Length: 285
Image (cartoon, rainbow, N blue to C red; front, top):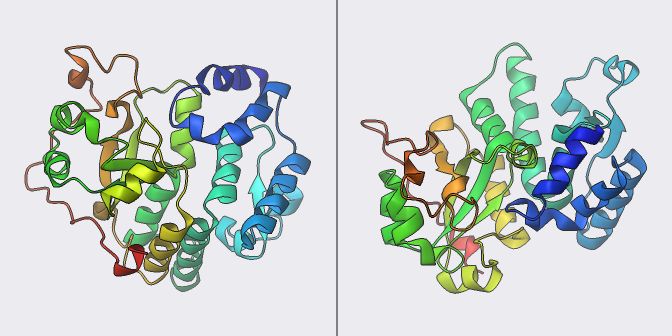
């Protein structure tokens, strides 16, 4: 990554959600991460969980001359990655940690591309792209906090129910653009979220004190199955907005009296009704 961008990242690594990625981002102290390092991490991840990832390869004119769509090339085993680019770096990291979700999105995208071509996009493709770029999974076991979220009662969700974060609510940040924006000092990123009902005890066991669950492979496999079967992410309206800055401890100004006047804390649109959180029986394992 360019020196300026790397420097900005280093200044933000102690803040959530980037704290959950220190096993990789600490390497930025030595400069841009090479393809050799990325692929070494890929091989290590594959050994640990037995799930293949695409190889990280340079996005060069020669590579792009194959005529394949970006998603089709991934399905064939190659992820075009721009060297020194923060956005693509974080995309690679998400592939390392969340391969089941990434493969589910890729499979659905490839199916739509094969039937609709590359010039037209379905509502499902828009939903999948929003989740891929800005997605998060919110693990929910608090009905009162959920009611606040439904109505965009942000002070209720983040202040009155602040003690629920890390005990009855937690978030897994999936979207690589969210990670990039945080690294580049965008302190007010908006997550596009899948809400999943789980047990409070499970949240408390896995979450850190800032309400972050780095990854949950067993449950993510069920979410990935729902994406592949088109039970999830068939329309952008299935995604819930969540201003990540509101999560207690995620923003230095969170204690100020006018914090919730910031533009990211938007009121609910008239008539907007959200789906209830997914409650897959298979998730309770």
